[in-house]
Image (cartoon, rainbow over all chains, first blue to last red; front, side):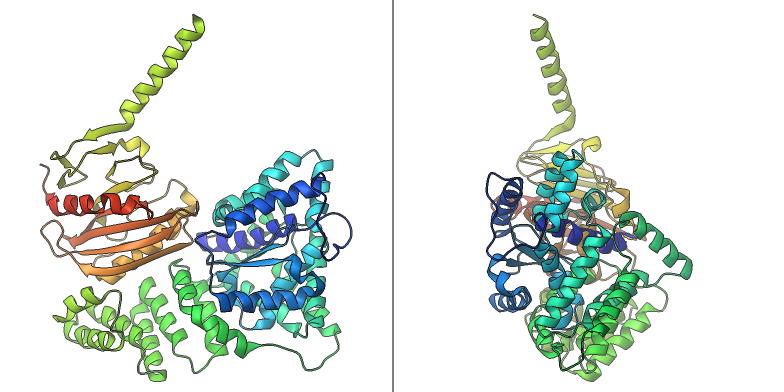
Amino acid sequence: MDFTRRHLLCGCAATALTGCVSQGGGGQIRAGYAPSLDSAEGGLWEIFNKAEADLKFSPLRMTDEELNRYVTDIACRLAGKHCTDMRVYLMRTPFFNATMAPNGMMQVWSGLLLRCQNEAQLAAVLGHEIGHYLKRHSLQRFEQMRDNSSVAAFLGIAIAAAGGGALANLPGLVAIANIFAFSREQEREADGVGLELMVNAGYEPVQAAEIWRGLIAERDAGLTLEERQDQKQQRDVFFASHPAPADRAQALALQAAAYPGGKRIVGEDRYLAQARAFRDTMMQDELRLHQYDRTLVIIERMKTANPGDADPFYYEGEVYRARNDGIDSGRAMNAYGRALELDETHGLSWRGIGILHRRAGKQEKAAAAFRQYLELVPDAEDRLMIQSYVGA
Amino acid sequence: MRIRNFLASVLLLFSLAACETYTAVSAGQSVPVGEGITVTAVGDWAAVSRQFVGNEGIDAMWTVDGPSINQLLFFSRVESGEPFIKSTNQKVNEGLPTWRIGMTEPDVMEMVEGTLVKVYEAPVVTASNLRPQVFLNSPGFAFEFDMVAKSQLETKGLVIGTQQGGVLRMMIYLAPKQHYFTLHERTVRAIAASARTGSS
């Protein structure tokens, strides 16, 4: 398992984690509920209240008002009368993850926003997290650990999991996840609740399975059959208590099929309209992870969703240029060329072409491409360096 | 009496350990920093002993206020196909970007970004202002970066380097964005300007 694959798994673990801590004791939580401060649950909430106070000032927070309002509105539509019990925090962290703390603090990572193709897929993940909250799975877990005399461990984990810093400390999450994962039953229950919330809010439930299929495709990207088998076995070590992604996708698809058909919200256009303003930042964060095969899966999904969009081809060029293995330069050149066919003003693609030519020692061609880049992107961050290449 | 002796021993051990951790680098002193590079200190610095440097690949680490506050790192000879730094956590090192002969300066900047993301386990690293800069009397490059490390501390960095003789030579200054980065930034630029090839 490579670094990036571990991150994928960690991200899922983190989801389980804070999700765990987010629920309270037996039975469904009622709207407006707040535990007594002198109760164990009250103490647990207090830990997360303090963590939330810190989270508000995290440098990783994505503070754009419109995007925050958009995601919060989706969460509210799903949560219904519990809407005011929850707060959504968008965090710039390039891994697939969303979490819900027991006090109603929900975190949504940018890696999740990048991977969703439509509003219904995002609603599926948010609904799942809200499901853990409504069913008070964390408190169940807490009580279970208390019975096993593991309270200190639980609280230590809760504190670690509550902090955004700890969430960013992904290798640490592996250890945490092993102790503090939801049970398979809790995960299935949260999936079921999430699906019901989706349908009640008018979303297309079939999309819930799609998000998992996308993750499976990422997990398996670039692996041989044998390596995929190893991958599954390793995953099982980490997530012994979690349904396998393939099983999960299948179960969600079956459950979705049981709902009566009809016109339901997928919300592709409005999701893309909201996410597009941040897509480049999120994609650049993804590219910096150098997890080439997985990133190519994300890009392929983007291409399918937006066939006339030049950006996914540019991102594809960036992946191949960075990997620079074998015929990758040719692949990158083709991808940049395709981006320019779709949008002749795509200046960053000219930058990529210029770099490829310069690497190959074709200085005149490089200079011509760089001139196009500088003309189209006059405020380029690397303007001074590129000017030095063209002799300007 | 026993307790006093014990405390004295502990203090002695601590002071010895402290002596071994840092070596003073006084203003104006010319010091070799790795293979074939010598710099002249501008201001007073402390060189961190190799065993306390942590990550692999760093030829010299200097600090003014302690490594947790600011670090000036020197990489004197990165070979083609190698990452310029490696974490002490081997799992993090899987798939680290490598420097390669023939890379352009934008390639190097992106390689540094991708490496910092992994080695510092930083969710966000963003480089900017790539520009030409002479380093070691050769055409080179400089750029800044902003990093939010896993501690969520906002860090700013300055990278100055050159690709010459089939190797990458580079120095990186890292410090908290608030206050400390700008406090020593000019000094670091002056140290970079003093860098010469050769051992003295």
